[in-house]
Amino acid sequence: MESLLFKLAPFLKVLGAFVLMLVGIRLKAGIALSILAGGLVMALLFGLGPIQWAKVGALALTQEKFLFLTAIVGLILILSDAMERSGQSRRLMDALSGYLTSPRLRLVFFPALIGMLPMPGGAVFSAPMVKTVSEDMRVTNGDRALVNYWFRHVWEVCWPLYPGIILTVALADIPIVDLISKTWPGTLAMIAIGWFFFLRPSVLGRGELMSAPVPLSGKKRTAMKEGLPLLIAIIGAIGLEAGISAFLPGMDFEWGVIAALAGGVACVMLQNTQLGLAFLRDVLTRKSVWSMLFVVMAIFVFKDVMQAAGVVQEMSRTAGGGAALFAAAIFLPFLVGMVAGINVAFVGATFPLLLGLLDTLGMQSQTIAYLILATFAGFTGVMVSPIHICFILTCQYFECDLGRTWRKLVLPCSAFLLFGVGLFWFWL
Image (cartoon, rainbow, N blue to C red; front, side, top):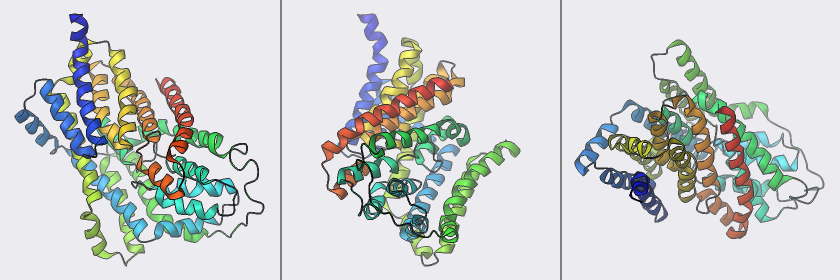
């Protein structure tokens, strides 16, 4: 009995710290404060005093990786806000809408397009568009809510602008291309699962959705112009990162991402001169921007405190590597994702533990495979979370029953997780 308790002790300590984090998130204490509190409790349980905790935390905020990530996340938020506030996102939608002649494609296109802009609660931005394009369709509000919510998130496992993806590669210290080149099938899986559960004729509309869809003329030149900032940011980030890795291996690849995002911001500012410097001042003083940056800060403090306290070493020493990896890669990301309802929470709270275990067990060659497993598990928790802000706002907008709508997410989310497990074994 004593031997079993000895083996379980490190896991119980970590579980206690995670429970504190989850309670803090659930009570709306804030993700950043919850992670900091959980990290402090974990440090104390593993013998690291408050003064050492503060010193380790302060040193974490001087790291180059932290400064790079802060700049990248800040630029992403500025780009998203500039496109939304200037009306450029809506103009891009209007220019592209003329190419959508299929009723089902019209339903999913705008949520998917808005999904390319990583903004909190973005589903409520696309909800009015879904309502507009489906006014003449035989579709219930519950179906509208499910389609809007699901397809708003199809890009999150591979889109290079999402903070969760950027945080993952920053923590793992790998090029972003190495990760998204292996997670992109997740987007195809989400589209296929979404079609099967929400869009196929026997589910949505019981046949034809509308009698005579009227195609509009498309506007290629306008679409290219309004989408230029996104193209600069996305293609530029991937291209510059690949170029730096190939021709300047001694240079940090984050410089390429920063340059591309800065180019995207400059482009949208030049295209919308009415924004001006007042817009930048407003964005930089917004609470939501600093809250996100505070989360990044808390994650780096947590990561370094965990290493300084020897958490990973003690877990791997007292139990088999398989059990620790399973908990770190599936259970913990899913649990944190479900309670927090946001990707950066499960990445920041659980990935340092996972990466530490892989390093301690000498399994660095399997890092990307386990990151894929943890990403799919955590994102499944986010999607099935009843407190996910996109889900709540979508149900409120379409005035549909939250409980009944949520139950329809369980099976598709389970299918997505199973696909992630299969992808893990494929790359392993």
